[in-house]
Length: 467
Image (tube, rainbow, N blue to C red):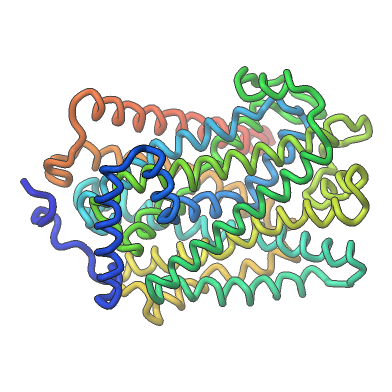
């Protein structure tokens, strides 16, 4: 069966594909990729680097307030010991995303429709609901982080910028930026390019802090990546809790929804499958691991070695002020806060884009029309997080984390079912030793993630049951 026709599923989606005026650019891109296949490895890498983008959207989305909090605590409480967590967590995500890319680019079929038809409606609607809910609820802590860091940058510079005002500035910026996505292929590329800059700004800021603070123990640094240690509790913080939190925070359910549609929005097809794999490693895995590792090292170099440190008082703003004592009262504070602000800004914008995609799928809207753009505004009440998130988190964060967390393995299981579906993938269904290895890795990732989240839910609910 020839999968180019997609007879079993219907025609590839037209509402997501680029406009006809842009088809010539895509055709040139396809010819460029075909030519790259004949080139040496080094030339292929250089060529691919010119085209990557969707992978950066995923690293930009996951580098948010949740990642900042878990990474700061890991470095401050346990030093270098948990450096292995971020690479392992993202590796589990990349395994699944490579399968999602193969499925989407081989068929060109809308992923929501594919999951609904070939995995089952409960999988499809549960996946969409979790992606929408997580994008709306987890918008609040992003604004809490953005407002706090932007206000603190102003204070460090001698300006009085209240957190609500800072949040309003971020809201205006996010709306203007997000509304550009889906307007044209050129603006999609511009949007992805800006996210690349934000991601590398994050990395540059934390790298500057690490360079200024230095490495206290190179042997401990290497062991932190390779020993896979789960440290005993310290300062009232469980090492197991931070391991589970870090592994679960690497990939969110809204990322699994956003990613395949970002591929289709780019006009990518089966010719882009190798590029997509390269994009995931270079745009998603590497930047995420660099950013989280540098942040952890920066806090480990200072806060972990501070005998007066109390875990209960740690926050991103307090961390920036502690680091400022090492780097400089203004420079260190501003650099560290800029990295945190870039994390929040990228995530805020992508939450809005994800909501637009989810609602367009659920209601059959065209990507880019006024209803899609209205749906992108669903998370904007999150700007209230600059004021109310600390109070809301107690009764919103825990149930949202549990519900959306357990729907992520549901989404993973749906993609496992698609991976083995002959009716869906036809001749593109992976076979042989490579296909078996890919399927085993997907199943292992799903099982590990389910176990991590089950333990996290148990820890969250146990105090409620004990009372």
